[in-house]
Length: 238
Image (cartoon, rainbow, N blue to C red):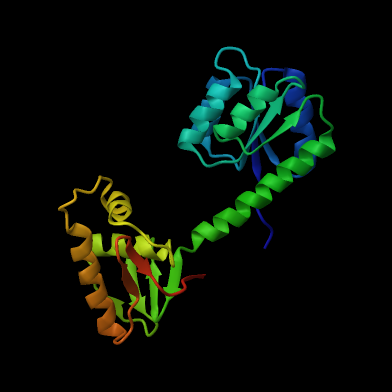
């Protein structure tokens, strides 16, 4: 089946650059949206989310760095910066606040095309990884999106919301010692009180439910003065 063309949003105040880059990418099979500033970019984003944004740093009004920071706070779309030759500091700042790559002006169209395709490939691989958030361990499969735990035979293991959050904490960090403070912060977003036994109680409950389907297996170890450790390997499954 033929794939739909990727959409690229070009944000640049220079009409000649917008036209040249837009025409070139259009000939390469991309759908192109054009914007001359942050306001027009926002209007374009209201219509649809592009697959990639090409963003000039030197824009009138709201500059490219501010737009990049704002865009990254709301979107995971890849961002390719267009920068002037002497803007090394801005390039570094741009990458630090969430841009994925940059091209220095003046640039050749083939270089731009190579960067665009590389970012789209990387984003595609990441989407595939994120699309499957199912993890297998011992004789269980945890579906993090559906928030359900099954045995290999398909039996549902009934977990409370807190127990599942704890399980996800271990599944995403197998064979790593997790302190009580880390676990409590991850599952409840708060700091641990020295007398707080929430984590210990949850671990005990989770162990009991897992052992009911996998008797004789110690899947979560207590580490003296350290915390807890999932002892077995975890693999992502489709």
